[in-house]
Image (tube, rainbow, N blue to C red; front, side):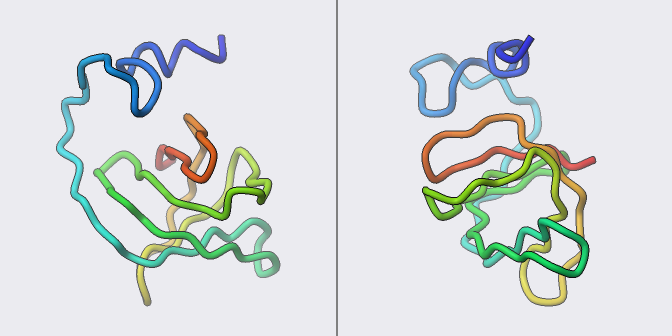
Length: 97
């Protein structure tokens, strides 16, 4: 079910439901790059926060982002394969694979 991960995480991002994450998020303002196709399409983003298991990204609002992609955080950072777990206008939450 599409809504199961959202409900299990405590509701929609920005909702008034209590925070249920057990992993501390590290706020950042790092530049990131979504690698949409190996060696081809790159989309710039801003990494708003990150954990050991995922991240909260700000992306251009009207750009289609595929469900899976590679994320490069900062300059010279490690490439992490990701899957989208939630979307809201110009924000996406991803889980590292």
